[in-house]
Length: 424
Image (cartoon, rainbow, N blue to C red):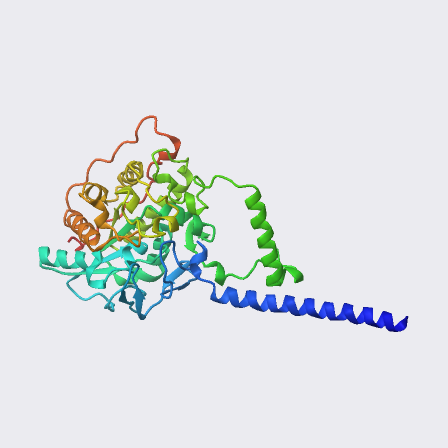
């Protein structure tokens, strides 16, 4: 009888040891998985949707994430081949920048997201390089166009980037590229933004911020095994109660919903994404510069067969043959800029009226092809040369506008003296 009890106790001890060994192995495995998990698995990661290489990006305290400075690497190009990407000490794509700005240089700073950074195109063929060459040739002046694009950025992060890191470059003209993805991108990072006097002061990346002491994790919740099991259970609950994600800005399928012919009511999200443009205009005036906004369509606003490489549209949450014909997004942006007297160059009509518009975009990435960069640079260069033309009368707000298209009037701002010696 005692021998039977000892055997039973032995079996219990061995079973417990085996269970502890299995849990420990799973804990270590989940830790290794977390280290090597691709950043592109999450919209809060460092690899924006539609991009496959995040080696140039890192978390940041002020701008959520940033391009690593002083890097040179060979990057794979979607569809085959590779190009060399280099960044300077300011984290800008391209050669080093002289500080202070040399006498006689007209410096243009181009802000925006992956469309501006153009990781799939050789540096000399990007629209920033083409814009610089065109303006030099047409004006005979020493023009610099600095590529300050950061994949995954939106106007909110561009304002913080300029305020904290780039104002010292003494740019004469700041051009902000407003991308159709900026509304959803703004919604993602806005929750992490810190305010000072009701204005954005910084946007630290979640990876850099310690968990709140008000709601610390319990001892057993710190184990990755417990977190993984909880995630699996939550996933099952979501599968049992599916929902329509096509109108939800927090989902992959809904991030471009505002481009549709019958869009959801995103009035709050749209206005929030546009508000930082006014702050950027005030900042550029304070530093004796000028601001211009530029925009262009995404592939599915130009042709149903643009950027139809395998998995490209699906990765952006867009159906394979989608074609968004609505011009309301461009009208909203124009209305906003007109009301705040900010110059806007809208390249959507030249893009949409080009025969065989699919050629303006890469097949294996939802961004400009070399031909698209050439067209975009040509349109922006003409707008830059016409900056000193008399401003048009602001567009009045349309009567009976739907709530999601109503843009508030410009806030009262103190008068700022026009920049001296800054005309192009």
